[in-house]
Amino acid sequence: MRENKQKILKAFLQCPRGSDHKIAKIVGVAQPTVTRVRSAIEAEQLLNFQCVPDFYKLDYNIAVVIEAKFAVGSEGKQFCIDAPEVLMAVEGLTSLVLFTVHKDYGAFSGFMDRLKSCKPVLGNVNVVDTKYGIVKPFSTTSVVI
Image (cartoon, rainbow, N blue to C red; front, side, top):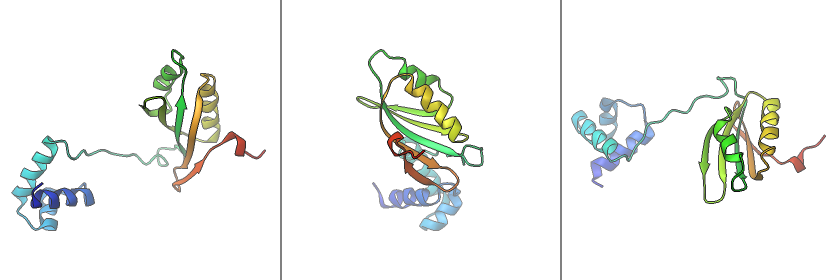
């Protein structure tokens, strides 16, 4: 990769919302060079611009990453596709990794009850407090009543 292209790509990573003019100032090249390189980077799909919402401000207090395995032919995968709490499900060789959001612990608990009715083998379940960003491994064996 050419030196200017590397510098411009690095500047985009550090300042993804920066204008071509601002990136040109950071890197020390002309603005048309940045525009040309940006077009090439986007055409090569080296860089994607995505947005990540602030779930806390959207009133979702809990985000959860769940690893689950379902029996072949079970309704588990379809449940994951249809459940409104599931923002993303990534299928691996033998399991699904789910990213879900919930208003509160009660909503999360209800979702887990519905998920468990599909009889998955649950792997790691990590709960994220969306206000503070605290990640806690979740286990029904560690719950104190």
